[in-house]
Amino acid sequence: MESIGVLMACPMNSYLEHELEKRFNLFRFWTVPEKSAFLATNKNSIRAVVGNSSAGADAELIEALPKLEIVASFSVGLDKIDLAKCKEKGIRVTNTPDVLTDDVADLAIGLMLAVLRKLCESDRYVRSGKWKKGDYKLTTKFTGKRVGIIGLGRIGMAVAKRAEAFSCPISYYSRTEKPEIKYKYYPSVVELAANCDILVVACLLTEETLHIVNREVIDALGPKGVVINVGRGPHVDEPELVSALVERRLGGAGLDVFEHEPEVPEELFGLDNVVLLPHVGSATVETRQAMADLVIGNLEAHFLNKPLLTPVV
Image (cartoon, rainbow, N blue to C red):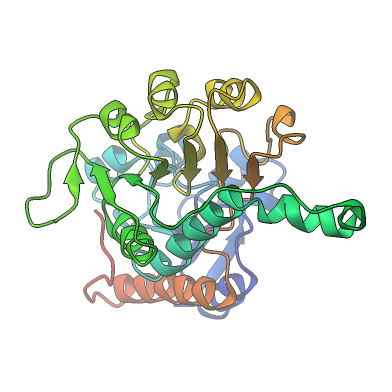
């Protein structure tokens, strides 16, 4: 397989990069200054693209690679891949589901606790020496809070199970009601937001879910409500979220993702009701290695004419 050209769209994981280089003829796209010239020169040797949540395979890249056979995503989300174009050209697509579910769900619960109990702010309070001048202010209880989840897929279900351990009533919104699920279903995100204390975004990013959390949803959640986003930044109308937090029309937010990463609205930096993370939902050593192994496994299966491990297209 050493002769098979694999294009890695951006830097994502050193273990994955090393394993790809051992097995394939690896091209690092982010190191190429003249991308169009590079593609013209290597278009007949590149048969696979490896992408992630930051860079994948859009229509332009797919059209530039006539020998492309498979796009393997080092991520669950597929919003950086033109799936319609892949289907049209018979290009296979894989992602890395399941292996990152636990980490993302763990982080969602961590963000809930961090926002409500003000863990980051409390940490700064101790480090700055302010504790010597008086106790920190009272915070908000997490146990028993009503948790509403947008998207009850693998990650949404894992969040629900964890929140249940904190005696949290669970409700959800998804494209269709899931009759086999015992949780309360709401047919709109606004209704879900009006009936929960914590709104968790855990769905895939599609045209339908772009800005699914907008001003109407935020207002329904209200000044004591909290938004937790472990999905994608564009799920939330960021300017509306920022203004709601600044004006205290929304109680708080725990954000692992942002609309224009790595850019983060500076208005959030001075707020004590927000916890900000640099898109680290699946960023543990164990999970990133499992994700990398899944990418490698899918590529090897494809080029050995075996069934793909996690096919999407």
